[in-house]
Length: 329
Ligand SMILES: [Zn+2]
Ligand SMILES: [Zn+2]
Image 1 (tube, helix red, strand yellow):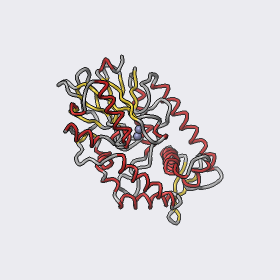
Image 2: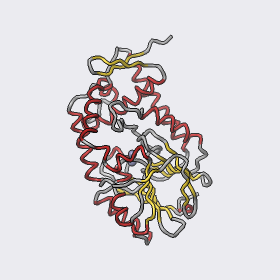
Image 3: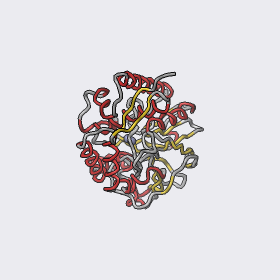
């Protein structure tokens, strides 16, 4: 089974940040009526636009032929060009409701930033960290024009294309509203950033407009991954990099990786209670200050998993959240 058998062409577009894991893939899919659909839309930079248009030219097609635009999740390397593609084609844009605020920009209000400031401070983070979050908000504005209207895409929706149909799987983790497309008959999983061959998926801290995250990113990610591991996948078409096989091995390596990280955190907590920000530099000694948000998300994600497994407990003192080992009984 190849993507060409499904009437699908992968168009990689360059992304200006290394954490992404290389160029982002736009999947151009033949629609039954002769038009085209997109699974992800690339990024709204000059280079992103040029790469996408070159991909269309190589196919002898144009953006104006796009009928539907499906977005896997609310990260700028996946939806950043959606607004422009919509203006060119008039196509509706679909995404899971939990990521709508990212696509419409309503999730990036000044009040939203205040909520992050307050929460990061409770995790023990220095004030400067907020500067990086602000820069991230501004980058987003620059590389992804917000959409006015986004249509819902939900678990179990069936999408019919010219040569295959796919089921929408809601797999929260990397973001709260991430979806993958599962073409069961052909056993092809369009995994976007839920499953990449060589990069762990960075389940990021996401407040979704609340003071306390409801979305426990890594806990959710691990549950979603259990679902994906059960699928009889023969080919994974990821959000970055080439299609690959052996999804179960990739997942098992990832589970070992997270287990080791959690063991390391438990070892550090033997020395006494600590805030996530105190643990972060001991787990990532080489992280740059600009990566602190990523690092803190990773540490907090693992702490939430350990908390769910009743290995650690949290307490809040003077506005700071501390984690400590639970005595084993
Ligand atoms: Zn990505
Ligand atoms: Zn992503």
